[in-house]
Image (spheres, one colour):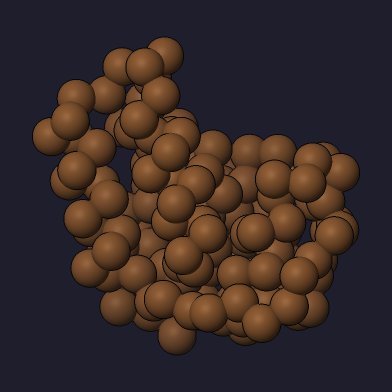
Length: 134
């Protein structure tokens, strides 16, 4: 079982462009038996907050459906340590989640904000993830 964490920008990109690489990663994370989407309370709260921003113009039904799937299919972890490793501090919650889940990959559209790896987790783009796993 491969544990993965998705940055919020992957979730948003998946909803905005259902045919793109982020959408493929999200669908794989929710449906593939060999993959497990890992989520912490802080990560889920970030998803919930950002996905509801008016500029993304997603319907309540689309938002609720996506969040419900994540709640149901996600592997929930409790973070044990605080991390201060990202150039954008809002990214630290994803590293914390990845560490708690012993995730193999953190998938993001902003690799420049993250270290290349963290506690055994490789930070990759959606395309890189698909090339490695897909």
